[in-house]
Length: 131
Image 1 (cartoon, rainbow, N blue to C red):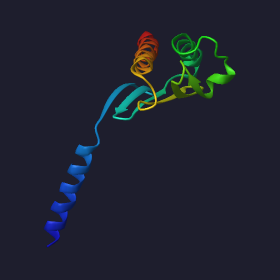
Image 2 (image 1 turned 90 degrees about the vertical axis):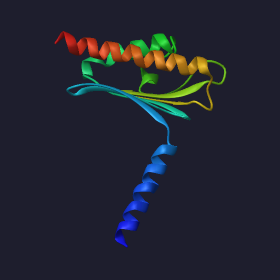
Image 3 (image 1 turned 120 degrees about the horizontal axis):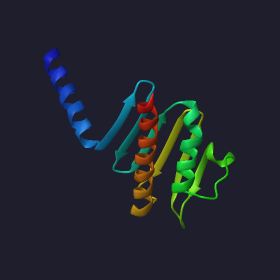
Image 4 (image 1 turned 30 degrees about the horizontal axis):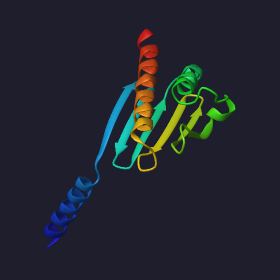
């Protein structure tokens, strides 16, 4: 009897995990990491890096997303990239969080955020490799 419940629970978990489609890309070097998770509705970028790299990451975000953003706005803000395209960015010393809702934004904005994540990966990994 218990075996039927275990099998049913396992099948339910397998079915549930099959319904949720996401893609994860993670780069990790010691305490430095960047994770890009993508589902059908959202793109998430989470990064941990050395505090000394925060200014480099802020500069990359400004160059890619909003050249007029001030440093005060970089800590936790919702960027309006073009007409109605928005994404959430939170940058703290050594940490970055980006959230993009795919349903509310177009493909151009999605590609810009993916390119931004790739550039941040390169900066974080290259600084780590030099040490």
